[in-house]
Amino acid sequence: MAFKQEMKGDVVLISIEDERLDAHNSNELKEHIQTQLENSVTHIVVDLSQVRFLDSSGLGALVTGFKNARSSDGDLKLTGIAAQVESILKLTRLYRVFPIYNNIDEAIAGFDQKEPGDGE
Image 1 (spheres, rainbow, N blue to C red):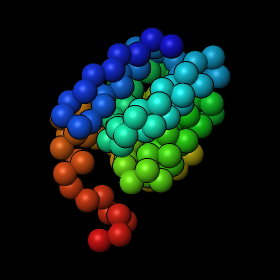
Image 2: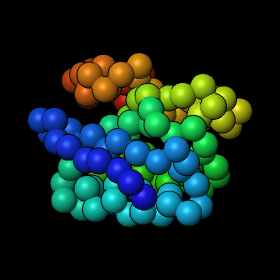
Image 3: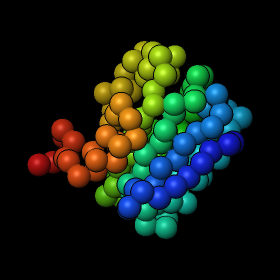
Image 4: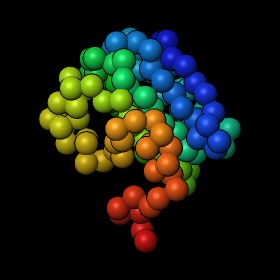
């Protein structure tokens, strides 16, 4: 999988550089997110702006990353959602689960704010 990673303060930004997030490459993303969590990076933003196709494996990698981040007292946020990916998130109702932002800066700033349902 082609992705780019950069640190922005205490947030890791993972930009997916493939047009597809599917069974062929989703495991690599899942493992990469898990490695970040094991290295005590708990604020993760995944930029999907280049992704045009997302299947159940890709969704599974994102859900697993989100769940693991939350269990590590962190969070995983999404940004750069293309229309095709947005329709899949709506169809599966996962848009209600993931914090989704319009751009990277908003997603990073979102770590300073409590999400609805964060227990406060």
